[in-house]
Image (cartoon, rainbow, N blue to C red; front, side, top):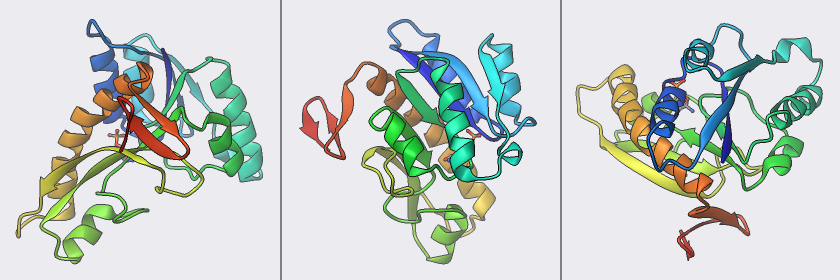
Length: 203
Ligand code: GRF
């Protein structure tokens, strides 16, 4: 399968997916990386792996709709089977989500449905939680609200700050995102009627 990854920043999850995709038996190839930010270090990671890159800055567009229309066009140039959001820090329009519905996934650093949105690690600490984690989900029109495919949990220790916790969560991100991307590529997991279905079982 052909994978297009969307990023805005450092791209450690992108790196984990690129590394995994080089293994035998992996069902997908990253064919392009698209960033809204020209300075994203993930673009360098892609170039180092001989993967095509494109930058499409939201600052060059007047409206979210115009940006997403251009983004759809850019992504479609690469004919993806799967579009992977990996730290892409833009809210997507309904039109964009509909266009790629069922082949669009995201990773969110919380145990959804808890802590949708930003600053998830600090919010989990402030709430006194002892368990935190990360979720990979299909993207639907509801922000951070699409059906969850896989989660990983991490402990929160009393002395943790948000940075400690982010690091612990990141390690789990790098384990589960390549795994789920592979499942999507091989159609082991699909979205049906806004639910995630794994090996024929509704999750
Ligand atoms: C991750 O924490 C991910 O959960 C969130 O954005 C961050 C991306 O990190 N959606 P990286 O660019 O992959 O290192």
